[in-house]
Amino acid sequence: MSSIPAQPAPRRWQRRTQAPPTIDAMLDRYFAEADEYYQKETRDGGRRSTREADQQRQAAKSLRLASTDPETLALVESGQLPETERPPQIAELQPADFCAELLYVCRDWMEASGLARKEINKRLHRIRRIFAWAAKPPRRWLSAETVADLKLVEPLKQGRTTAPDRKPVSSAPEHLLTGLQAHLAEQATAEAFELATMIDLHLHTGMRTSELAEMRRSELHELDDWMIYQPAEHKTQHHGKLRQIFLGPIAQRIVKDWIRRIDASTLPGMAAPDTLWRWTSGELYRDQVERACDAMHQPPAKLARRQVLATGRKKMMRWERRAEWRKRLGVKRWAELLTWRKQQRFTPGQLRHNFATMMAREHGRAGELAAQKLLGHGTLKTTEIYIDPDMADALALLRQIG
Image (cartoon, rainbow, N blue to C red; front, top):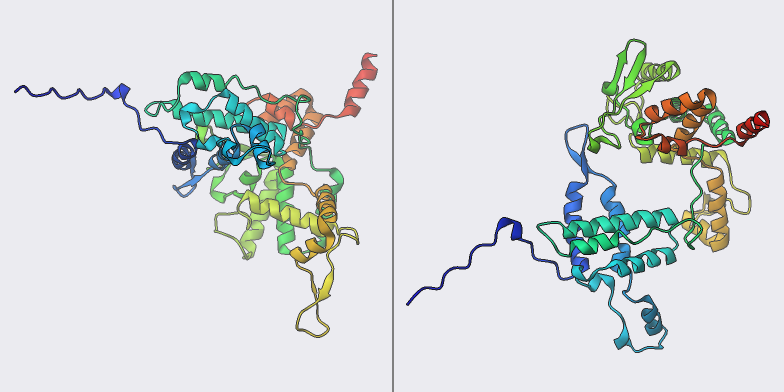
C-alpha cells in the first residue's frame, strides 16, 4: 500500500497569520504591538511610551462605537423598526469587510460628535495607517486594493462641513504676560521666582515646553561665546535628528544666574542634582503657569468661589469644594466661568509664538529663517504658523506701494 505523500510546507512568502474574527479583536492586536513600537529612549537608558499610541486609540473610537448603518439604527432606537433590524457595529465585522464606505461612516460619526475639522482629518489618517498595518505581510487580513480605496476618502474641507475649526494658537497676549511677571515679582517666594525665570528663559529661546522643563546641567555646553543646550530627549529623536538650542547673551545670563542661585542655597523640591527646575515635565510647568494666571485674576463676584460653614465646627468657615462650587453655579454659569478663565490664561506653548513673531518683526525674512532653525522646524511653512500676522505692517507697506 503506497503512502500518501505529505503536503509541502507553505513557502515563507506565502504564510500569513490567522485573521482575527472581528475588527475589535484586530484593534486589540494592533495596540498590543503599538504600545511596544511607539517608545523612545530616555536619558537613563530606558524606554518610555510616546503619545502616538494613545492618539491612535482616540482615532479608533469611531471603529468601536459607530454603526454600519446609522440611519437604520436611529429608526430602531426610535421604535419605528423592530430590534431584529438593528444593524451591526463596525467593530463586529471582519477586517476584510471594511471598505471606503464605512470609513465615510466613521468620518460622519466623528463630525456628529462635535470634533474639530482638523482633528477629524488626523484621526482619518490614523485609521488608514491601522488598516495598512493589517494588510501588510505576514497578516494580509484585507486586500491592498481596500487600503488604496481608503486613501480616496477625502478629508473634511474648510467651509464645507459642520465640524468647527479651532481658533489658531497665537502669541501670549502682552498684557497677560507682563501682568503675570509683575504678579510673580510681588509674591517674593522661591516658587514664584523660579516660575518667572522659566518664563523669561522661554521667551528668549523659543524652545519647546518639555525641552525647557527637562533641562539638565549635563546637557549644557559652552563653545566660544555660545552656550548650546542639547537635550537627550526631544520630539524628533525617533527620526535620528540632533536637537541643538543656541542660547544668546540674555538667555546665558538667565541660566548662569539661576545655576548660581541653586548652588548657593538648597532649594526644596528639586528632583535630582542635575535638573534645573523642580517642575521636570512640560505638564507640570504648564499647570504652574495656569495656576499663576488664575491667582492673578479673580473671577467676577457672581462666579467666584465662596466660603461656607464647616460641618461640625462652630463659627468655622471653609472654601467650598469644586463639586459644591460647580453645583451652585449650574451648567450655564460654570461654562461662563470656564470661558472667562480661558480669556485670562496663556500657555507656555504660546511663548514659542512670541519668540517667532519677535524674530520675524525685528529681522524680516532673515528672522523667519533663523526662527525655523531655533524652533527646530523641518520647513519654513511650519514656522510661519508660529508668526502672528501684523496688519499694521501690511497697511504701512500698502501706503508705500500706493
